[in-house]
Image (cartoon, rainbow, N blue to C red; front, side):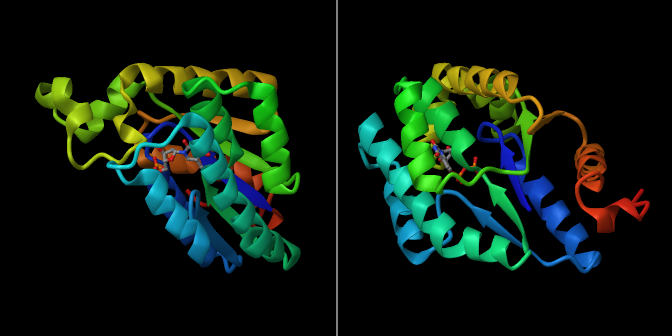
Length: 219
Ligand code: TYD
C-alpha cells in the first residue's frame, strides 16, 4: 500500500507522518517513510541542488530534476518495498509536481502527465492525504505576524520556499483543482485543526483500507 501526503510548505505534513509511522509500528505493521525529493544517494544529491537557495534553476530544469529524483526513488526503493508487502508512507509524490511545476510555475499540464508516468513507472498512490492551508496562514505558523512582510527574504528559507505568496496561492489552487479531478483518491484535511484531530481523521480513513487497523479502536 502506498500512502502519500501533500500540501503546501508549512501545512504540517511531517507531524502527521511521524504520528502515523509510530502507530503502524505499534500495530506491528511493516512500513517505511520516505520523502521527495530524496531517499537514494543520487536523489539526496539532487535534492540539495534543487533546494539550495543560491541556485538559479529554470522551471523546466526544476521539473526534470524533481522527476529524476522520483524515478530513482520509485525504481530503487518504493517498488521493491511494495512488492514485499511493506506499507510505504511518502511525503510528497507527483501531485507536488502538478501543483508546484504545473500550476505554480506554469508548465503545460499535459506535458507534465507524460513525464510523471515515465518517472513513476505508472505507480499511483492508494490514498493521498492533502493538508489544506492558506499560504498566509502557513507563513504565520513559521514567522510571527510582524515579520511577515520580510518573510520571503528570510535566510532560513530554501529555494522553493522563496517563491513568494502569489506562487503559493497558485500552488494551493492547483491542489484544489487536482483533487476535484480525482476526489476518490484524496482525503482533504483542514491543516488548522489540532494535530491529534487530524491524526484521528487519518486513522479513520486508513481503517477502511488496512484490515489490521480496522479491528482496533485507537481513540
Ligand atoms: P521539503 O523541505 O521537503 O518541503 P516540505 O517539508 O514542505 O515537504 O522541500 C521540498 C520542496 O520541493 C517543497 O517546496 C515542494 C517542492 N517540490 C516541488 O516543487 N515539486 C515536486 O515534485 C516535489 C516532490 C517537491
